Figure (cartoon, rainbow, N blue to C red):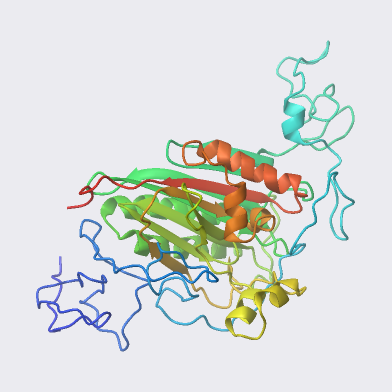
Length: 447
């Protein structure tokens, strides 16, 4: 094994804190002192060993009109890439259909152009009906969710009424002791193009780590459902490998997003699950998705994202301010950041939801964003696709619809949030994961 070279620095290039020649990392900001880049890297990719206490600076004062909160780590949020650089101008990809502000509707409305309402009933309602098979039905036969009398053939259609049956991904739920997620097809789409991965593991010192990954397939791309599934699976597996071996959670999140991107890129070279050949023009319409993830570990909250799926912080004490922890890779966000429009003007534009960052072989450039927080109070992290936040966009709106007991009942909380989106119209697939954040007892933590 090669030995790490000793540095000859007297001060950290990242934060100017004094360092010793034997130090491998800066104890203040986590800067990798073994590397000597041409320019100092930003605080967005620390490589501190997880057992090393991180000297977090005091949180900044909070501007009531900003997305910041008192729990924010300075410099992490304002739209930087994983090197701490400003976001580049990127190509724009439109994920259609999208509604910037879907209206409240008491009944299922007529479908917009290019989409349709489902002929079959909601599978969740059908499941509540009697499952007693009619006389003469072969033993073990699956009954149609629409007519409840016909058997379902090998192709997934009812032999009596002809309805296509709901697929496994139409409604998915998963619950662990420390995290839960729910994903639903919604009321307008013919399939669920979202995916998620939730899991729990332990750090080298034995302390728990919980993670959630949520991905949203780009509907205008080919095989978006496969893209989101591949990305969620790859990112989740990457985190489960990196965290137990001591990789800093923020660096692990960065690596997980890169792994997810690589998994989606591979799809462009492979035939689809239905046996169709890969698209010869793969870089023009390759499988694509967005990604957002969160890790709760060692008193830290880490988020990472590419695209317009989001993470929100909702404190248990609702008198404390909630916050949105991510900045969209979207046309509207770039217009606001550039000072060309205010937020109301940008999100009223028909181009508002055009995404400028995604995972896929035709992405202009992969720019994973990560941010680290150290909350000073318990709360819950909401990780979701735009199928939810279109109906609760601002942080205070999201906080109002998150149940008060969400930290203690995360699965119930996720079900309530999905129901909120469906009640609002269900125009898109909707996926949400909830991660409770609890404070460690005074003096506990890594040694």
